[in-house]
Amino acid sequence: MAKVLIAPSILSADFSRLGAAAAAAEAAGADLIHVDVMDGHFVPNITFGPAVVGSLKRSTQLSLDVHLMISRPERYVADFVDAGADFVTVHAEATPHLHGILTQVRQAGAKAGLAVNPLTPLDVVELALPYLDLVLVMSVNPGFGGQPFIPGSVARVEATRRMRDRVNPNCLVEVDGGITTKTAPGVVAAGADVLVAGSAVFGHGTVSENLAALRAALSQPNEPGA
Image 1 (tube, rainbow, N blue to C red):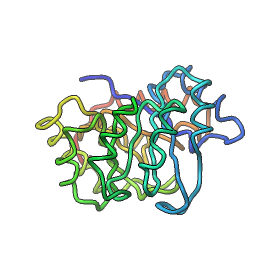
Image 2 (cartoon, helix red, strand yellow):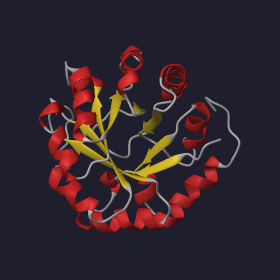
Image 3 (cartoon, helix red, strand yellow):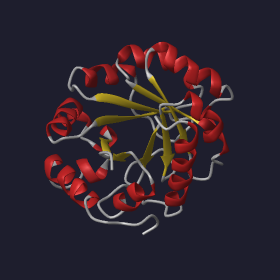
Image 4 (cartoon, rainbow, N blue to C red):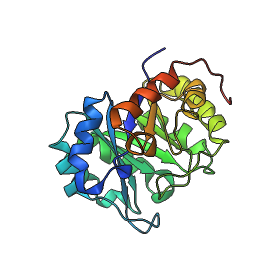
C-alpha cells in the first residue's frame, strides 16, 4: 500500500506561532501543511489570507495544501497561488463555474482540488475528476476545527475512491474533519490517500508524539466502516 500522507491543519495551531508550528510539523514527518481559508460568508468563521500563506511558505519546505472555504473563490485563486499555495482546493458548493475555476487553478500553476460537504451528492466529483489532482471529502461540516467525525463519511470515501480509480487514478483522495487515532484507520481502509489532522496533531502533547501516534494507528489492520 502506498504511504498515506498526513497534512496537519494549521488552523489548530497557536496563531501567534504559525511558522514555528509548520516547521515543527515538517520536522516530525508531516507530508503537507493544510491551510484552511475561511471568509465569514461561505462558513461562519474568518481565518487566513494570502499574506499568511506567504509567511508559511517561508517557514517550511512542505507543500501548502490551501483549502478555500470561501464564496466566489475565483476572485482569489491567483493571489493564493502567487503567495505559495501548491494545492488550491475549492468547494463545489461555493461557485457556479466549477469547470472554469479548476482550469484557472491549474493555469495559475497550482494543483486543483475539489471539496464536497457531508451531504453534497458525489455526482459532481465524478464529473470533475478529469480536471482534478485532489478530491477532499469533508467528514465534518466546514467552518470550525475540533468537530467529531461524521460516521457516514466512510462510505463516501469508499465511493469517491471507486470513482477515482475508474476515472483519474492519479487524483488523491483527501479526508478532512475529526481525524484521530481512532477514526484514521477506517478512513484509510476506505481509500483515503491524505488525512488532514488538526487537533490530533496540534492539540495536547507534542507535534512529534501526536504524528507518531497517528502513524502507529495506521499500521494496525482495519476494515472499511470499522
